[in-house]
Amino acid sequence: MTSKPVLISQTAEATHRAMASPVSEYHSSSLDSRIASVDQEIIYMCPFNGAVKGKVLITNYRLYFKSSDADVPLALDVPLGVISRVEKMGGASSRGENSYGLDITCKDMRNLRFALKQEGHSRRGIFEMIFRYAFPLSHSLPLFAYVNQEKYTDNGWLVYKAMEEFRRQGLPNNKWRITFINKSYDLCDTYPTVLAVPFKCKEDDLRRVATFRSRGRIPVLSWIHRENQAVIVRCSQPLVGMSGKRNKDDERYLDLIREANDTTKKLTIYDARPNVNAVANKATGGGYEGDEYLNAELVFLDIQNIHVMRESLKKLKDIVYPNVEESHWLSSLESTHWLEHIKLVLSGAIQVADKVSSGNSVLVHCSDGWDRTAQLTSLAMLMLDSHYRTLRGFQVLIEKEWISFGHKFASRIGHGDKNHADQDRSPIFVQFIDCVWQMTKQFPTAFEFNEHLLLTILDHLDSCRFGTFLYNCESIRDQQELRSKTVSLWSLVNSKMDIYLNPFYTPESGQVLYPVASMRHLELWVTYYIRWNPRIRHQQQSPVEQRYKELLALREEYLKKLEQLQLSDSSSPYQLANSTTPNTTSSTASTPSQQYTHLQTPF
Image (cartoon, rainbow, N blue to C red; front, side):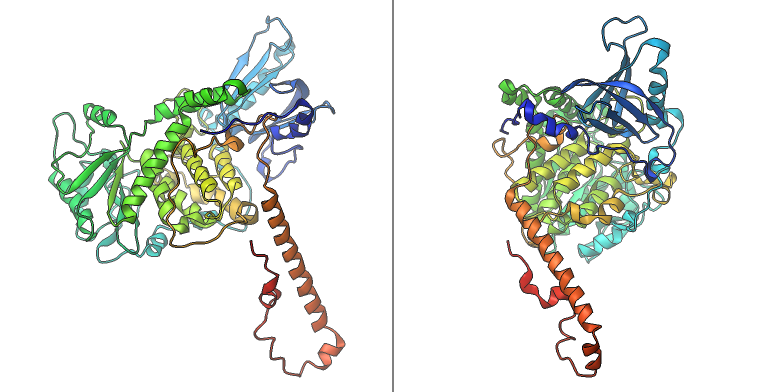
């Protein structure tokens, strides 16, 4: 079980007040190119410092508050996309100090409360502005990503190309082929256009299988093991129903998947759901593979549905914001079941990875194949394939398994939608990133990227600043011309890669990672879930990591100086006079970094 978050003293708290926000001063930029602002005096009811007077500025992208009290240097910079709910607090006749204002509920584990003067409906303007731009889709306005004017040298939309990724995996081959049957989204409107399927199956076979799989999400290849040719295949549940329907084409299709790998005697079907849920789904026309699927074995992984996960995160928020009850911390955390769910997701992915690593092909599904299925396939691929543990490879993994295969980001996050009570909302992708963080903690040298990347991804999951996580599937993104009209998050990340790199990264191409998925080895991700509390001692960079970064910077500085010296030497009169003299070393040592490899600092 995770240890308690460490509380810091009130005297030390002052130095941490700026942690309320990643910025301390507002600067207009291309982000706020269309500023529609409300700028007025307001009181922020800070749960850590009490009532703080200041000014609030609201644009079409953000809410920015800065205190006017020099003794409380506090600033808030809140992208409007992270707001899930805005409510009016009190009325014109409300009594009591600071009882009239606004309550704002955010998707990033914090709530904000502002108090205003009661005279003259002073909150009307600010309420209307927030409501309008936090929920643009509810007001027939475009999401902010469509008006964002940011420019980057790197085009993040080019990070993932399906054919390039299949070729990297060694596909197509004599057992698996690439099909464009879904190029117009006719087979399945929530699948990508490029799919990998068994070589022996025909297009008509795929169409018949699609009629027996929920939402037409047929079994297709996600990943193939280069050595043993075992595969990870993903899909949705079969439409068995209460009457126990069968589909010979579907049964034969799964057998073709098994036969595509000589060492797979039985195809292992991992159903992410608890057994009882899978049985209950028969009542709505769904179900699971029964004994009629010869040469297949079915394993239930007991991962709960989106509603259970949503309630679990709500409970977690209750115990971490605004205050952490230290005396009952462990029992309170246990009562949320959040880490228990993380454990089950990781444990399921480990089973998938282990089965494939030992040469057996697997099929993974839940109900519709876009929530728990994406968690399991992407985590198993992260464990099996070191490419996905690089900075760009991780971007490809998210683009491939989550975005292109139709995880319902719009429904799960609620981008620009005022319906905060929507039962489709759920932190499925947050859970996946949490699982990745758990792996980086257990294998600190195996990942090229650092925690800052994971935090950045989650921040922009909600912000609507980039187009990356908008909409539910590729067909809708194409209709909305997303790639031509918005900026990709990866454009931001790849334009300043240095800040997202792990200095301890050691590439090991063949290593399979098996994290320990037990409660004793899992931790609560304090840097994300409790980052808004200034009284929590946030984990500082280790002295070793800090020193290593300093040495790398020093090495870079020396190499630049060396290069300058070489340039000045080459332009000196003496050097020019002797330029006809052959230099046998110049062709072999072209750069300072090549000449002085001994300057590298081993760790």
